[in-house]
Image (cartoon, rainbow, N blue to C red; front, side):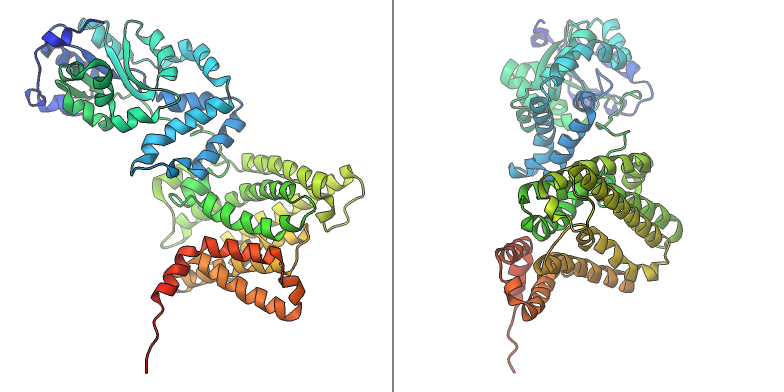
Length: 507
């Protein structure tokens, strides 16, 4: 492509009519033609790719194309729950690193994904190419132009080759360093490779305000939204286990990590897996079983919020995000996911820790496996019935019944698995901490400000101390120390604040 921009007349944004800067015109193709007609012949054109030249987001469509879908989803879920980008610096670290890590990790763990994407590229390019924009460029004499994207070259280039073969990709991320272009911005990235003159003399066509640096530095900014363009997050239309918990019920809290894994599962591990013959396999089994339970528990969450909008004066729901997640929620698939997790969990339990099963369910592995599966299926059914009942109680009565749901999340596992006084004290401490906070909320309408983690620690000290008066030997153990250390570490901020605020009142 020639560097004709060096002789092009530079048009400042002030030279444009207000309509040329507005992104919501009903005829974006005509706006592009009008802008191109106002420019000198040979002026460079820089076009955004995602949702501009191509009417979808290349990163999300790539993630959507991953196979097998279940494994791909579990990888993406793990990344969104663990959020490894938090370990990296910068206030905008999620914008800088999230997409890069998602694409990189999936491409490494599913190495066939990039070759499959290249094979699908011709069909995908034809399906969502922006014909209106391409026709406007062609009619204005711009068969060749430049393309800049915050996406990944490995994903964009196969599409671009079939959309506009004469176009040149001048800015994109790489699989190994896809975060850099997001940190630099498109304008600086282009300048580092092609010089500042390319941007300064160019017309930039984009749909996104995140290209503000490019729009400010170019000769003629053209912010255009295309009616057919659509940003579709990967797996957005499918049932996805735990999505309602993350985005609908408790948006922004990362509850699957902090409430389910670091509270429920951590204490279940310390209470049950710790004393199993094979504790690591036991921890994996408990994790699978609890995820199975949570698939069913989520049905109650959706039902609770749906009914709350109809029957409560001040329902705690989350508007559009919660409603969208609820619409995509499918109880049948939730039970299917629960069954899949249950089978893996019971197999791990029976294979490596058959002695930890309390109930006499058979002597051989197959009878024991079927027996454990039957007990667990009954446990899931009881949990569902309990949540169904809770959702149909009046608001005043829910405070008392709430403890049943919390017992089923924790202590109820003792029906199937053996534990000891320390394990029971740990689980009950979590139940009581949650129950106290919920009772205050239901009775007063306001939330108790005391930290739940700190309350859990205090209840554990009380219950473990009470157990020590009956059987000191059962309480003095490595398991007790590990549980105390974990609860203390998890509540460390509130502990520091508590001691910092202590004051001695003098008479």
